[in-house]
Every structure is written in C-alpha cells, then in structure tokens.
Image (cartoon, rainbow, N blue to C red; front, side, top):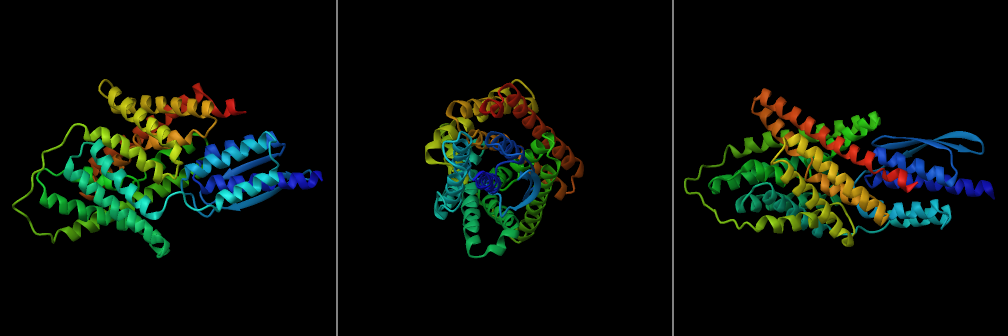
Length: 405
C-alpha cells in the first residue's frame, strides 16, 4: 500500500513538472515549486530543467532513479498555472490524494482553450494599437499598429492548418509589419514608423524572454538561461531579416506627394489605452476573466511608477525602482490572495522590458551604424539587469516561497 502511494506521489510530481513547464513557468520558479512540493509530501528528489525537458533524480524504494520528462511546448498560460498551483497546494496539505491530483491536472491540461482564435486575434490587435498610444503614437500610428496586430494574429490562427509555418512565423510577421508601416508612412504626414512597427510586433519582440533568461542565469540556472537567451537572440535575428526583406519590397513603392495630416489626438486616448492593454494581456496570456483587475493594477503600477520616477532619475534606475515596486505588489498579492505571483508580475513586466531597444539595436546594425547598434544593445542589457535586480530585491524583502512553506 505504501509503495502504491509513493508511486502516486512520484507520478503526481512528474506530471506537475511537465504541466508547469508546458504552461510557461520560468525555470527558477518551476524548480522551487517542485522542491517545495516534494518536501511537503515526503519525496526525495532533485530536478534539472531545460527548455525542452526536465531531468529528475527521485528516490524510489530506497534507490535514486533518473527520470526524463519531454516537454512539447512552453506557451504561457496564466490560468492553467494558477489552477495547477491550487491542486499542488491541496495535495501538499493532504486535502486530496496524489491520485486525485493526477486526475485533476490531466483534466486541466486537456481542457479547451479559454478564448477562441478570433478573440485572440482581435485582442492581439487591440494590445498593439493601445501600446502605440501609450508609447507616444497618434491616430495614424495607432491604426497602423492595430492593423499589424490584426494581420499577425491572423497568421498565428493559420498555424492550426499550416503548422510548418511556425518556424518562420516571426519572419513573416516582421515582413508584414514593415510593409504595412511603410504604406502608412507613405500616406500620412509626420508618421512615426518605428513606434508603429515596434508596437505592432510588441508581443513577438523577445524582450520578455531576454529578461527572463537573465533572471534564470542570475539564479544559477545557466543552461536554461543561456538556452532561452539564444532563442531570444534568434528571434531578434529573424525580425532583422524580416525588416530587410520588407524594406527591399517597399523600395518599389511609388512616392506620394499629397499626404494626409491627422493632428487630432485627445489627451484621454492614453487612459483608454491603459484599460485596453491589460484587457489584451488577459487574452494573450490566457488568464481568467476575473483576473482583469489584478492585471490592470500590475500594468498601471509599472507604467505610472516608471513614468513618475523617470522624470527625476536616469532610465535604468527608474526601471530598477519600477520593477522593485511591481515585484513587491505581485508578492503581496500572492501572499494575501494565495495565488501565483505571475498573474500580476508577467503583464506588468511587459511594459518595462527593453524589447524595443533590441529592435533599435538591430535596425542600427542593418543600416551599417554598428557603433549605435552596439551602444543600444548595451543599453538594453543594462536596462534588463536593472529590471532583474529590482525583482530580486523585492523577493529578498518579501520571500513568497518561504512564506508559502
């Protein structure tokens, strides 16, 4: 009987490891969660996580055995992370058996997507258009970013029917973004093409992955961090190639002498955008509808804290303090509500991550302005480090994992 219960516990731990990884939980948080789970249910185990797999050394019948768990994908799903964590808590507190936990996790993993493809596409466009408004764009830039987001969202919907496109989806997205922004630039006076292009690609630009990779490296998860860093770098390169191809195509665009001027831009547009951006993140990160308030608070916290602090301090230190505040708020939320801190932390980080700097760095290098490109890349690195250390300091001050124990 004890051997059967031990086997159920081990199977539960391995299933949770796979589920957490496939739903996008960062490596350092994944391993901490598994260590805490094993300590509570009486399993001796060590874990090593990489981008495509998890290695586990688990003590079974007095002997340590190695296990390999293959990971199919790693797409962020805040709803499933939250639900799985609640099951882990129930098993840890012996409210349910490990076998019951296994069944519940399987149900969650096999459940239908929370939002349909057309909803995802629409909110992809809403997020990109709203981001253009927040980052200084006016009506032409907002319309352009919205159009780019709509087309990119539609491209992702096609992956169900053409899965092979997934290998070049970022490249195609960058080409379309450049073509659309160039068309808008040809028709509108004083059009800010960089803002429209960056915001149109904001979800694809791997600033978030880049920052998470540094976090993993700082937390001594070198292989996972370097692997994620390499993936982010390749994504940047694919965007760069897309920019080159798009620009070459647009060389054949005729010049237009009569351009449209749209200077009308109400000040309250930005505040509407600050409501729409969290709404878009709710759908894109697959969070529960009831979490809209928390995601909104996270976005507003990071945006306004950075905007206020940057008026008095240099940008890197402003990012450090803004991420520190966001980390504190997310940890307090996790402790009081007994939820996963990622629900607030991830959406809030998106408005702080320096992905646009990576975009500018690539753009400079493509234009043969190597020095400016390197300077921008170094600025992106220093900004990412400031963000990471802000989160680390917030975790030192309020250690969620220790409190949860």
